[in-house]
Image 1: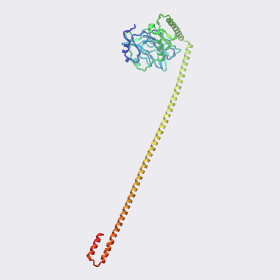
Image 2: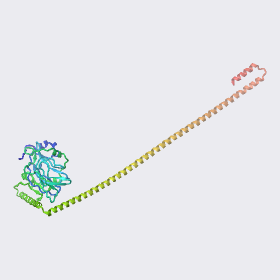
Image 3: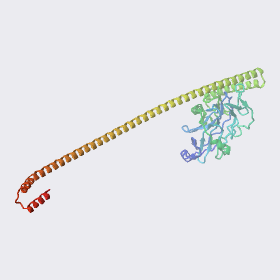
Image 4: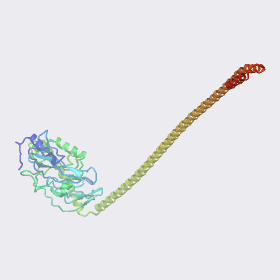
Length: 432
């Protein structure tokens, strides 16, 4: 029984939803999604494809759920597994938590999607290196085309529980365990472009809306993402028959084609179980050829990797040589700059020495000029002194000449007293 909370406003549900619980929640709805339809899984189209279960998505423009068929899809890179998305009740509305690719399968609400997704964990296969191995007990694999498989029984009955949401009054009562919480913290990868195109194609097909098919979509699964042709689809086991004759005829044609294709696949499985030696040998030959092709591809990849390593080493060597040349040029430039600076320093020092020598020469010249001037002055003073002495001597001689004449006259006079002559001599001595 589906609970429809039509009295809860959608805007209030979106605003009050716990955004911190999950960063990638996309949309919330105020009524529960329909039950999961029952359908058969198509055969795997080839190696490397992983099963992505179908689910009910919501179109806010149309205001209704529509079925996104299950399909076989390739991961973004080897080693990744698909964690399906799920609807969960969060006390205000049903919130959609999108699926993602990761190295481990995390929590997907406890929803039993079947075919390896019983509600917790994943049992559809595993990666060994770059090759994916399928569990035939839960995955439909044509072992003649896909030699990578194993057999491990898993409880996988999708008719027991068809609930498509977690929590609420009628939802699945399951909470993530420690391992699922740990896996939920691993790195995640978004759906691939074919998966997004697959969702868009399902949204454009009105017969996949629950309002049109009553929860029993006529296209429950496809062979590949976006493949909605008659040969590539699988209807649900309880596909609803409406009142449109053209739609009923189209759905019947699709089911007939799919039934013939499934019968053909069953006959091929029967031939394989009968142990046809030629087919077994052909399978072994194909397996050997595939292994040889893989070996050749590995060898080619190793050669390319070796060539890439050589090219990388050559590029590194060239880059190192360029760096060495640049360092040499920088060293030469630095040496040239140092030489120029040293030359300028030497020229400056030489100019300073020349200026100092010129100053010393000028000082010596000035000292010599001063010395010559002093000697000349001294000589001139000496000449002046000699000339003055000669003038004084001439003046004395000139003064002495009249005195001697007078003395001679007095001596020649007989009447001069003796004391007069003595006084005269004393005066002459005092003058001298």
